[in-house]
Image (tube, rainbow, N blue to C red; front, top):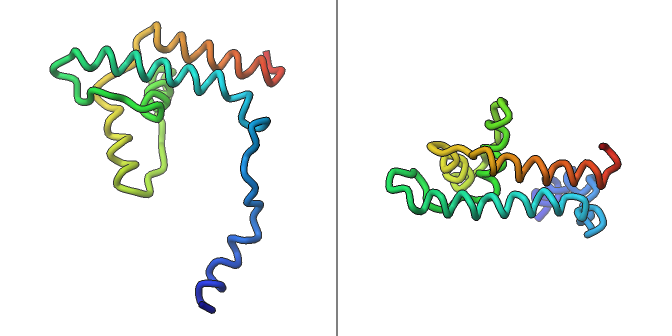
Length: 116
C-alpha cells in the first residue's frame, strides 16, 4: 500500500477535473463532421473488395484528414489496440467531398471560438 501511494502522489498534484459540456460544446461541429465522414468512408469502402478495412473510426478519419492537408500525423501509441486502429487508416484516403465536410466542421468550430 505504501509503494502505491508513493507512486500515485505525483499524479494527484494535477487537476483531475472532468471536462464539462460547456468546455466540449464548441467541438461539436468537428465531432459531427468526423462521424458523418466516417460513415461515408465506411459505406464507400464496404463495397470495395480490395479495401484494407470495411469500417473506419473517427480517429482514422482524423489521421487521414491530417494526411489530406499535406502533413504527416505522428500519433502516440501505448497499446496494441491503438496501433491496430492507426494501421487501419492506411490503404485508403479521403476524397474531396469528405475533406470539404471536415473543413466546414473546423470552420464552424473556429467561428464558435471567434476565430474567423
